[in-house]
Length: 152
Image (cartoon, rainbow, N blue to C red; front, top):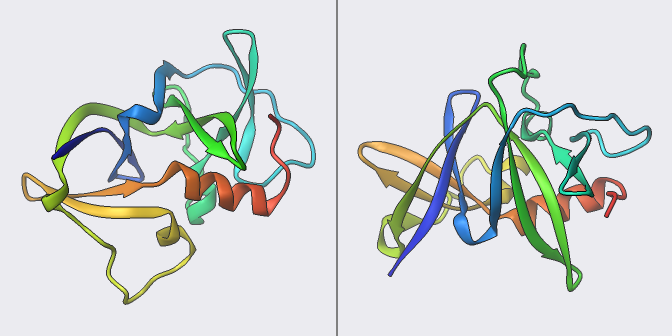
C-alpha cells in the first residue's frame, strides 16, 4: 500500500509530510511576530480568518534562517494534539510535488546518531537514488508544545 507525501526542501535536504495532513500550500505571506512564544515559531498568519502559527523547522534544527523569505512557502497542515484539531503552518524553502511512497520503501531511522531533530522522523524513503526524510506532524507539534504554549 502506498501513501501520498508532499515533498519540500529545507537547507537543500528533501523532506515529506503525509498529504492527508496538508490543507494547502501558500506563497509567502506577512508573518506577525508574537512575543514570548516558542523560539521555533516565527509568528502567526491570517489564514481564512483564523490565526495560524508558522513554524520554522530551520530553528528547530539549529540551522541559520533563510536569507530571503521571498521564495519560501508556507505549508498549512492540520493534526491532532490532545484530542483537538490544530492547524499549523510550516515554513519550507521550496515545495516540490506530491509523490506516492510504498510502505516497503520506508525504513525506520538508524539508531546511530539520533538527536532531537531526528525524533520528528517517521521514516526514511529512498526515491530515485535520493533519500526523503518523512516527518510526523504530531511529533513536531508535541515538541513545540513542550517548548512553550502555542496559540490555538
